Image (cartoon, rainbow, N blue to C red; front, side, top):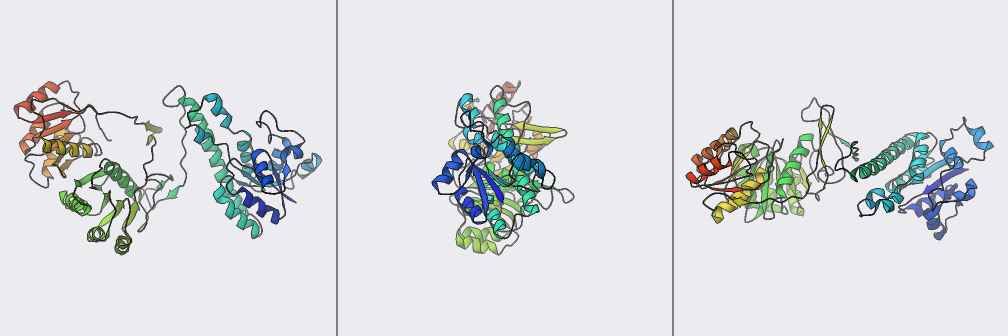
Length: 494
C-alpha cells in the first residue's frame, strides 16, 4: 500500500489531487485545515494524530513533528524496512506540502508576535526529510506541479528523474523561506542584514554573456527579468541590460515618448504628438547608433508604427501592447525580439564584485528645484531642462545631455571628465545647439563645462549643485546670461 501525506496552506487543487490518489489506491494522511477541507469534500483520509497516537497540541504548533511521520519520509527501502516494521512506521511515498505564507504576511504590518506564528516548522522539516529521501519519496511543494504528478501516477509511477527534479524545487523553496525569515528579522533593527540572503527562480540559460566566450543566465519571474519575447530570437544578456535601461528611462515620461538605447545608454530620446513622430525624431538624433538598437515606446504599436520599425534593423522592440496587424508585420522580421513592457518590480539593486556583492536601495525622495541665477528659465527652456534631466538620470556617468523641448540633441556619456562628456555631446549633436538646455548628472566642480556648453549655444543648465565652487559657477552663468537650476539630487550611474 502506498501512502501520501497532504498538508497545505494553499488549498488550490488539493481536492483534485487527493481524489486522483484514491483512484490509484493511495492511502491519504492529513491533519488540521487540510484534513478539514478533505473531509468537507468527502475524501477519505487518516488523521495524522490517529496514525501517530499523539494529539495535535500547542494550537497546532506540534502535529507532524513525530518519528512515525519523519521515519516514514526518511526510511530507506530495503535498508530501514525492519526498524520501520518494528515501530509501526508506514512508508510515505508522496508528500504534498506548502508552507504558511510568511512572505505575504511580512508585508501586512503585523506585530512580530503575530507574524512569528506564520513561521512554519513542521512543513519545512517534512519537505527536507522527504527531499533527502527523493529516491523513495516524491515531494510536491507547488500546486502547479500537481497535474504532472497526476499524469505520472496515471502512467505508472513518478520516475526517479521526476522525483529528483521535485526535490531540487523543494530544497529551493525551504531555502527561500528561511531567507525571507532571516532577512525580515534582521530588518527589524538595521536597514541591511549582516547576512544578506536572496533567491531568484525561473532561471533560463542564455546563449552567452556579454561576449561569446562568457556563460550567462537570467533569473526572475517579474519585471524585465521575467519577460520573454512575444516573437523573435531568444533574448541575450546584453538585450536584457539594454531593455532594463530603456524601460527605466521610458517610465519617466507620461507623454508619448520614444527611447532608443545602445550599449546601456540612450542614443536618442524624444516626445511627440504621436508615437510615430516621437520615434522618428528619436531615431534621427543619432541614426548611426540607432542601427541595431533597443527601441522602447510607451504607446501601443499599430500597423503604421510597425511598418516604420520593420523598415530598419532593430534588435529589440518594447512597448505596452501591439495590434494584431502590427504583430503580423513584425512577424516577418524573424530575428527582431518583441516584448511587452511588464509592470515595474520594486527590489534592491544587487551587483557582484570580487568576493561579494553590493546592495543598493532607493527610498522615496524629493528633488528640490531652485533657480539660482539672476535669470529664470523661459517656459521653453524649462521644458528642455526637464527633458534633459530625465535622460541624464539614466545615462552612464559622467554625462552631459543637450536637449530642446522635444528631443535630446547631443548625449555625452561615460567619460572620466565632465568637460569631455560635454565635448562629445556637442560633437554628436544632431542639430544646432543654439537655445538648447543642458543637464549634468553631478555638480559642476568648475565653470569650464558651463562655458563649453554656452559656447555651443546652450542658454540654460540644470545640475544638482553642491560644489564648493558653486558661487564661481553661478557667477559665470550670470555673466553668460544663462539660466541655471539646482535640483539637490545627484544621479551617478556606474
